[in-house]
Image 1 (cartoon, helix red, strand yellow):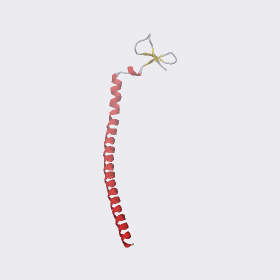
Image 2 (tube, rainbow, N blue to C red):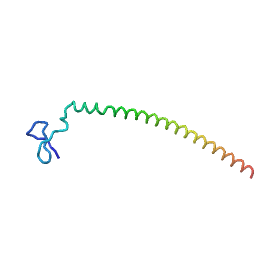
Image 3 (cartoon, rainbow, N blue to C red):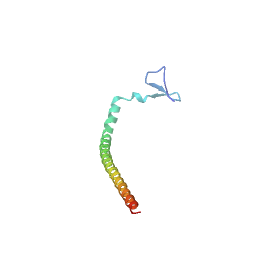
Image 4 (cartoon, one colour):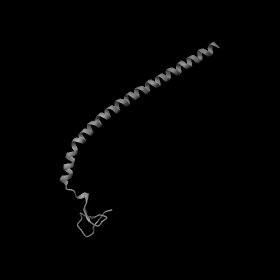
Length: 93
């Protein structure tokens, strides 16, 4: 486990063996910018994929909503037919 050295500069760190290491927080800003620039094409691809998946999800949700309404309508129709059958059977008895 590393800890900050009280004797060195604010960028000196000791590792478990007592030797000095460089803090990952001291990386130059240009290194971070270069990494961001390198990752940007991947991010664009991921954003496009996200848009595509989102539109598919919305389409599936609309289909599901329509099917659920159809199911409710069919259940109501079935209930009506069952009641009609029960009524006609009881009338015949």
